[in-house]
Length: 638
Image 1 (cartoon, rainbow, N blue to C red):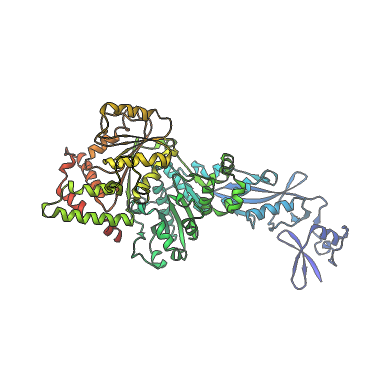
Image 2 (cartoon, one colour):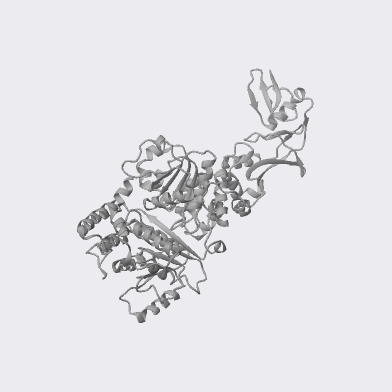
């Protein structure tokens, strides 16, 4: 025997054994004797359900996708002859009939289409849905036909008013600018709604601080260990930023030959920071972890989807992923797919489908923008300039490559031996300073003439690699840069490599440049409509020149004399400069450059309290001894 029941607002046929049979609307009509087919000995449902009314008119069903109180949802809505009909809990996939408010209705002929939508977006039940599912619904061609959208695709994820009054973690040791507070709130929102996002603010706007604020908030909520993967040259920068802004977090730098080999050891820390190379080497261990947030700094490092780095990183599981990059998209539209295959894999589908859908041209990029923009937060300096000081000084501590560290240590020991009992002098540190500028500066085979470079300058210098990343972003912004370096060979390297690497004009002024020609060089540089670089010796060009055409100043190697550096910076940061100026100070930790920075910082602090000498030759003996004692090899072992 069989009988009829109402289950989840659907009319079903139930056998004595308890087996539930889901049937079509035509089957129901046949059981009632008003259809043209057989109901296979099913009883008339009106006998089992005498209070249920059977309508002769069908319902029209559609979906409503909305964003409310910080949540995305998808709900069905029904109407009969244009009037709404209240629905209960509908199953998915949708049947072709429904019981609503004591009445049985058949559903009009768009059921198959509605089920296609649900299957394509992975929605298995009505109610809360993810941000990705919401955006998929919005972007479908049939959105207007079957789905009504109650909010805007882009503004949902970027509505700044939702975050401007958000409280930051109480233990964050920083006051966020309004745009940084919005960025932190957006990251927090995305961590609740999606699997990942891209923080693509321009360099100098504090992307690291915004990420640290999120990680601190997640820690305060009792979340698991987070993982930060960055270029090896930036590990020390992350360590210092955590120590400065979130000193209560237990941060572990996972680097070096004696690093732990057991994931449970790493998970005892709040945050683990490591390089891409270490992540690849330790992938088996990392893949066993249960990470909360996975942060990829300089995330363009995974833009090649076929690279071992890209494939490996995507095997590390996490609750939420952040791709941090001032240049999220560089050369090809496939770069976008590679990044989003980490951030939110379902959004752009598989690689073959993506390349077929989005051609590598302007049309493909325009078509793609609407789908990915809600997952990217990108602010430029010009957009938030009112929130910024006129001059931003950005210290960039860098770590030597292992090969660089070994070579530096060998030179350091020779310098110490040569100093002997005579005592260390500034002159004795020159070779170390030259090496930190670039190994080519000490290479006798490389001169200032037209001979070829000994090798790719990035391959032997992590500082030069960072410089190229920095210049790439400056060039993409359409801006100009001043770069100061003390060494003639470094000027030659830059003048020879940068034009071919970036396709920009590079001008130079050093001690050999005729003083009468210097202003004309500045005028030509300033007249350039395209991004360009002016490389200068800080002594030769540190005074007398007005170069406000550039709003980026890069001190590639630091000077003992802070006044010399400040005078060089003043070439761009002076009356007539209408844009915020970003000043980048690049230095290697664990080397003479770190000692120089410490000495400069001390002199500046003292200058604020008293009149002190700023001549580099008067640096005290203790500072020189410390410079000679610093070892990048020992620093990496600690």
